[in-house]
Amino acid sequence: MDDLALLRVEADTIWGREPGGVGGDTVFVTVTTYDGQVEVIDGHAELSPTTPTAVNLERSWVLASPTHLPQPPTGLSLVREPCDLQPPASWAADEWALLMSGQAGPWAALVEGGHVVSLAHCARWTERAAEVGVRTEDGYRGRGLAPVVVRAWATLLADHDKVLFYSAAEENVASHRVAAKCDGRPLGRLCQVHLRR
Image (cartoon, rainbow, N blue to C red; front, side, top):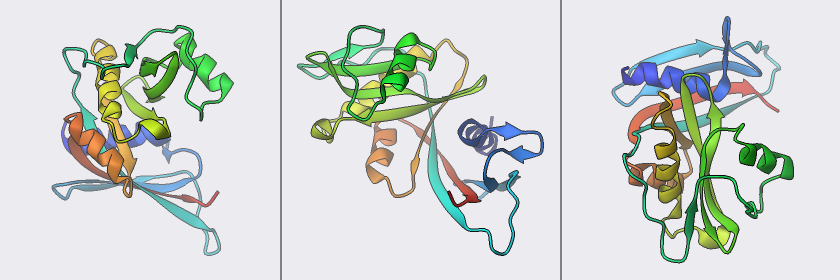
């Protein structure tokens, strides 16, 4: 697949595709590769002169499936199967139960004393692709943990025959650095114009 086709798949993975275009409150999505190819994907939301809108701008990378597990930093354990763990502070109990049940796709965590300090999980999971979501607890940021869990997550998906994506908001420079440390290949940018929520 070329980069434009990959960005189309990424847009479908993030916002979903229904007959006639992107579903929900999306007016349209543009996908732009770094070599200048552009495509506009129509959405279902209708626009009028008084409709308030907002824009989401994301950068996108495609991840390779690593062939070996990364080593966890000293003092932390790498966990990829359900066990008795304390979730990150921002996780709701029902979301955590879904993750631990395996229904939300593969995940990998760095754990200290039974508490998850960094987690990579399937933020989105479709028949064709998976997009990683990464959460690192505040006191553990800046220590290089996110690339470890992202690579461990990617190893779990090696046999799933899915395209692995990493995306981040345009202004999230720290997340861009994580993608680079995971050897993510830059694809381009996705821009969603949607009805203001």
